Amino acid sequence: HILQSRSKSKQSTPIMATSLFSEDCSSVSDANALFSASKGLLVLRPGNGCLGCTKFHFTIPDGCYALVTRHGADLDYTHPDGTTSAVWPPGLHVPFPPWVGVSNLVTKQSIVLDLPVKACKTKDNVTVNIDMSLVFRIMGDEALGEDPELVRKFVYEVKPLGLSQQLRDAQEEAVRALARSMRHTEIYGIRSGADDGPLGGTLEEEEEFEGDEVLEGTNDAVDRKKVKRSIEKGKDVTDEMQARLNRQFIPQGIQILSVMIKSVHLPSDITSQMSEKTMIISKNAQQRMFHINTLQNTRMDQQVQTLLQTFEEQREQELSSGDEILNAEQVKLNDTIAQAVKEEANIREETKVRIGNMEAENDLEVQ
Image 1 (cartoon, rainbow, N blue to C red):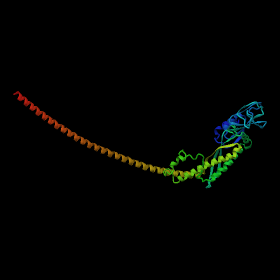
Image 2: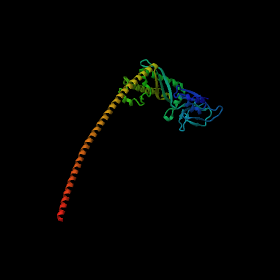
Image 3: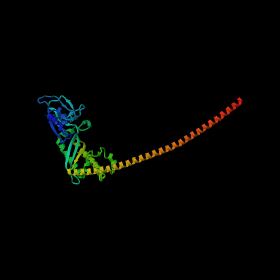
Image 4: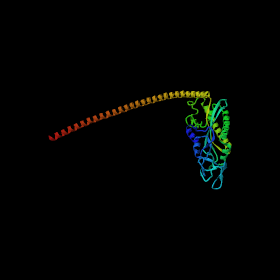
């Protein structure tokens, strides 16, 4: 019935765990489904799975650390080489009497735990809520060179509820100290991923916009420097938190994989003031951009008109030069025609004289 209720509520299960806990289940076969459905479930205590049955075997699902007991006492697994381990490997184990079975299953998956810290005071005494989250895993994997005894230590000494409280206490102290060291105008910069710039790239990629009076407001350059300092401080703090938590929890069998500052919530009146400031800066930038665009359009129109006028003058000059060349060629043509006519007249006259002379000579010969 636990598995059925988990399946029905799977749609509303949050992605991040808000608490850590353990619970009973009817059989080891339900383990993977329960661990997947419940994000904060760390330890399962399976039952026999078959009331009244006498079984001489038991199974261990993959993806879990398994602790086995005999009459309630811990039983180590003996490897073929003779070494022993507190954690039993997955698979079918036979033959074992009914009083030997799996007592605890511990998840191997990474857990994302949501740790909000409320009512933090900033340096200028503004109350903010900071939503933290961290990713951790339970150690004890022999394949990674870890001690399987850490699994027993977690199950019997640390326990899910104890781990949850320790993590909350450790995180809250560090986050409140961080908030107290910063002003409310800088606090947004500590969010993990805040180094992504407003255009989708990183702030380093957007440094080319710095110093542009059109794109920046009066105080944008100063604000940008403050944001960068806040981002660097946020990264340093989360890295230090992760290192400090690992120093505290690795001996207990818990490895912190990542620490994130998801979001920062300021009072609504402060948020409204910051939004209004941003809107004013944006409107001023828009007006400056519109003015510059108008000047650019006017300058371009003037350049176009100048070019058109230059082209017209060049065309007229080329037409005038063409007419002069045409007239000169026409004069040459007329001179050539006149010379040809004159030469033709001379030839005709010379031919006429020759014909007259020839006729006169013929007449003399006849006589």
